[in-house]
Amino acid sequence: MDASEEPVVELDLDEAGVATELPRPSNSGDAVQQVPYRPVQFVDDDLPTALERSAAWLRSVQDWLGEPVDVIAVHLDYDDRDGRPYYDLKLLCNEEDLAGAPIAVRAQQGQPTAP
Image (cartoon, rainbow, N blue to C red; front, top):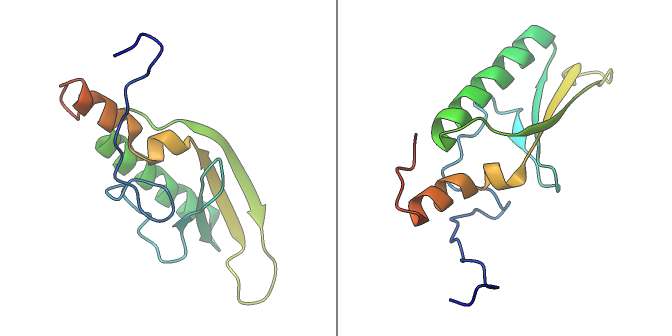
């Protein structure tokens, strides 16, 4: 391999561009969204509940990834329209982490996929 060439890392991604094995948020109203910083959304009328679900999701992703996921920012908004959950909590996550890149790199280097 030429010194200027970087090794190619194969990733198993779904149509949204995240790893097919990425743990998804468990509540049907929560979602991994499709934008560059990958907001992961948690919506609820009760803020502590939304925060607890986001923490549980972060723990499951950390276990899957084998390292802490990079959270770039946390955004909190509200939606006061009738029939909508009031709180809208978004974790802006590193898209390479959500795609499973650290797992693929460790596998390519012959390292265990989890530390």
